[in-house]
Image (cartoon, rainbow, N blue to C red; front, side, top):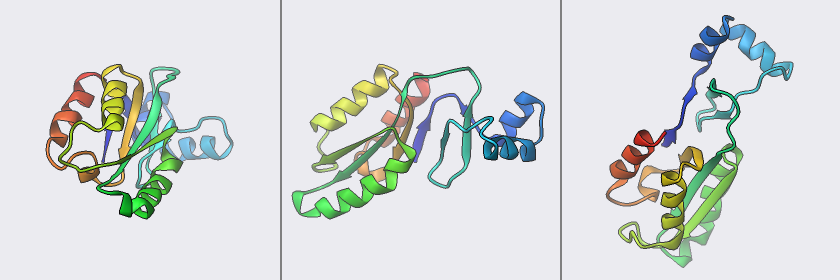
Length: 139
């Protein structure tokens, strides 16, 4: 699950550049044009509006300290797709976690271009739609 800020798929990018999807893939192999990011399913995403210095951020969370191994696995899963991964320990019902607040500040200050989660309920047990709506509004 992720919030996307101004990124398009390979088909849309190909239309924008006036080339085929096959050409887009060849350009990537030749290192002439690289996708801005990839989804967790490895789909290419391109930014068409120029350079962007915002971060691609992943958020991982476990409920307690005894689940640190799972937190490490989530971070390892997210890190190839992100510039930065935030790992939090605490209940999904607790909205007062410092790293969750840091993530929300990054979103609201438009410092994040793409936001990745290993699992949707890792963000919060309830209320994820509110955060996803914030992502859509402030793109």
